Length: 219
Ligand code: ATP
Ligand code: MG
Image (cartoon, rainbow, N blue to C red; front, side):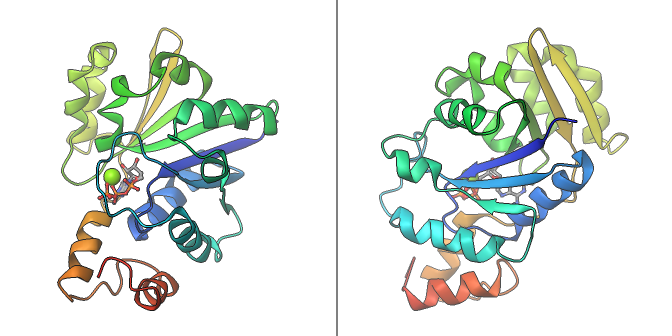
């Protein structure tokens, strides 16, 4: 059987339990052999001017994934430099893992922007997208994307909790829609909390919290 590899890309500014719990849920459901956590070097879609150096975000991903044998941090986008386009990463991973099935994991909020991603149509043919529920978004929001309109019945069932998984095909695209336990955690909220001197305990691994304090990130 071919290897099954999950890929979670993000700014990871910082990585938190929302990322980790969601990735573990997908690994378990899809029986993935491993999940790669790939911090972007320069996120094409984010305009924040306070994104800490990639080395910090990478180190926090390393600390956070150390306790799971199936989770691997990857510095492929940081090493490549420049704007981090997922298509370039997927094409490189196809070279590194010939014959593997690649599953690109995103939250609903990110996937809703898919048509703005570089070469998105090609990207959708190269890997299976796994789109996860996330507080603040509904699966029905996907119906705004023209190629998702045939998913109407499935998205309604997911939003009503009548389904937890749906497999959707549109032409050469294959997507999995996954209703997962909701984790109302975001990096934005964690950064705000640090700035305001509020607690971030239990939102992210302790080692990451310690790293943030030690390096005075987000203060
Ligand atoms: P920010 O608030 O800075 O955007 P974030 O918490 O959204 O940070 P990202 O690094 O932007 O984290 O997210 C990387 C990927 O993980 C995205 O596809 C995002 O949708 C997904 N993701 C992040 N947090 C969650 C969560 N709590 N539940 C489900 N998916 C999540
Ligand atoms: Mg985000």
